[in-house]
Length: 74
Image (cartoon, rainbow, N blue to C red; front, side):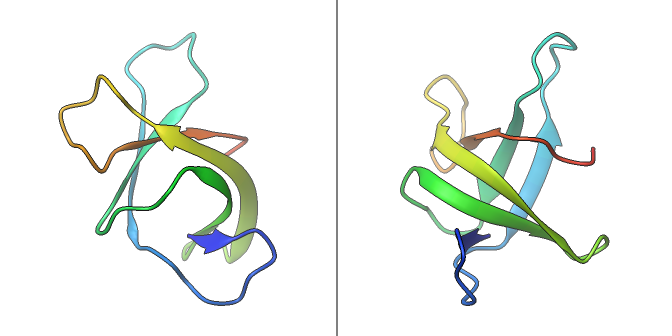
């Protein structure tokens, strides 16, 4: 995860699809907390960056969990 247009990685974590098929959002659980905002999500497998918005997932059990809004290849 990088700031939009940035070169320095800010966080590494896991991305999960939500269990609701009508909800296009994903859950990102970073290994360290990030503030909400605009980021670029970089999948090592695809070697591409995807611009996303991160917001806090208030109802998720992990307090680091973020909701990812944006198109992802999952």
